[in-house]
Image (cartoon, rainbow, N blue to C red):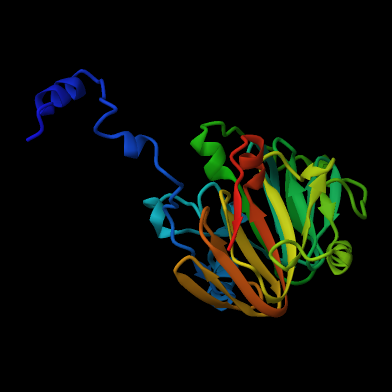
Length: 310
Ligand SMILES: [Fe+2]
């Protein structure tokens, strides 16, 4: 029994904590992610997209998203710390009612040709590999105007915004027909066409990890204040890297494998895997494309960004 045991319990009963017996918990030596890296295979997700299209009630259409949830977060709906990744399914004619929120979100088209996202009165097509941003508090809604079921990849930072308890959500009106009457925009501040991204990647010089990576930017910085997006082409094996931020990777095309922390994943098109913060990661492929969603911008703005190469 330590000499100060009686003092410590007396302090705790008075809602006062001593530093001397718990400073290691209060000030960890280094970040330690709650979640192990995780891999979701498209072939396991796809049957659920079909079931969701058939079984989900019409009034839930705008929320017909399958969110990839890591079990490490005690039942909370989180993919990796601060971030959510999901797939959304729309049947022909489906309309997702407009709304807006303080969380930042994106859509990346995997099989969404025919679907359209409207962001603040701008109509954004969703051809393969197109990225559509819905920045904080921008009105957005979706409609499938084609003849086929559409599926896209979604990502958002609700977990970060909710950890700060700064989430506001405003629903729009289902009856507001004017929301849908907008003009076309080829590329806009909200839409990044896939063909343009691929052109940039082809002419990019390899980064410090050896992959050709393009950062989606706005005014020279991250594309949104709290979400930071990248498109990477992996030819060969990347140099191991760890960083203080979290990442969700969508396999846009090709196949390969990744060694992340203690895990090793063999992935192929439309699979999703996570790189939790401060976890070593290296990717191997012959010509695969990865779309990478991160919270890097948050760490950068707070001057908490650190990256290391192995
Ligand atoms: Fe939304």
